Image 1 (cartoon, rainbow, N blue to C red):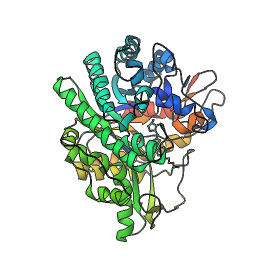
Image 2 (cartoon, protein in one colour):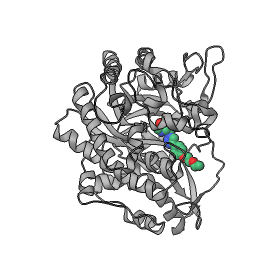
Image 3 (cartoon, rainbow, N blue to C red):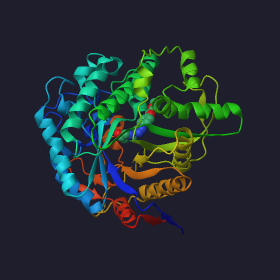
Image 4 (cartoon, rainbow, N blue to C red):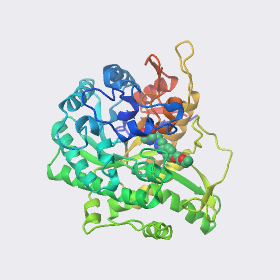
Length: 447
Ligand SMILES: CCOCCOc1ccc(-c2cn(C[C@@H]3NC[C@@H](O)[C@H]3O)nn2)cc1
């Protein structure tokens, strides 16, 4: 057994997102979003699930904050539903929407918990999607206007801001692979959307600086790691392409002001012509205060000609897998974090999402989720190793505080350290909740 310790100023927390937990989708002036539309289109979401009720956190946030207070966390990451603030995406502000987030944030602050606000976590107002959504550059202006409204309203209460959650999911998963809203399957469209998302991020950071807002701002790319099956250059290059699709494609423009040329060339071979206007790359290349990193899984891979978009295939290594089927690959967590530090320097990093799907149910009031505890132990051990090797990690927020709407998987996949009974909405703290609570209290755990 060994003791895994963390820096004394390490911040611990949990993360959620508006569409996944709030419910109340037709209350207090909230406008429809692309996930309301997508989830109610038959076939898009398992079991026809949608976010109309979810965890009903819109009304149960006080109970949820008490659960967080007992957990002993320092920071809670949530997202704001843009369509609660601007039901049509822009125009007249909805005061009842602002009022809800004041209630939530005041409850957090009153209980000594720091709010970390994600401005965009996938729930685009449908009215903007009807005008082209993220493919329309006017959506960038609407986003900056929404962000400016939030900055001015909550400056002084919120000190940690994230512009975008997982731009790879927003662009490629949702507009090329097509399994998330709005469900397009067009590589040119998805790639152009990725550029507009980066522009929205950069213009928002500029606005944050121009307004002299107190606090820190960043964004939260999702990451993965592919380990080459051999030291053959074709295997190494294939893995590099997939990691770059998530990491370099979004981080090079922000940190270096340019796209990774080997990926631009690869997309060109696939017929993609990215439209970049004068000044775009300068607008994206804004210094950020911290990076949110989301990591779930990785695997071993090798080159395979004409396989998928990037010519690679997974190598089956009898991985242990979670209940959503993702390989448990903690070495990928260490590798992607050290890779990011080697590429972009010691930018402060918060792990804004890391967690696992285990569908254990309560028995006699207890949820015995050993799989999730094991996942946390393995990934926090990898994180501790990354910190020791120089990665500038400031905090770790597990995904998620509670079971919630897992997008196309609906409510069938449970990521929470707190169980939610979707019929009664009763919350039940899982064994992993108590394990995480003890780890936070100690700032170490025994592996
Ligand atoms: C047919 C091919 O299908 C490919 C599916 O490909 C993916 C990839 C990635 C994901 C994914 C899901 N999550 C968890 C969320 N992160 C944000 C938060 O809202 C969590 O709910 N991260 N990545 C899903 C599906």
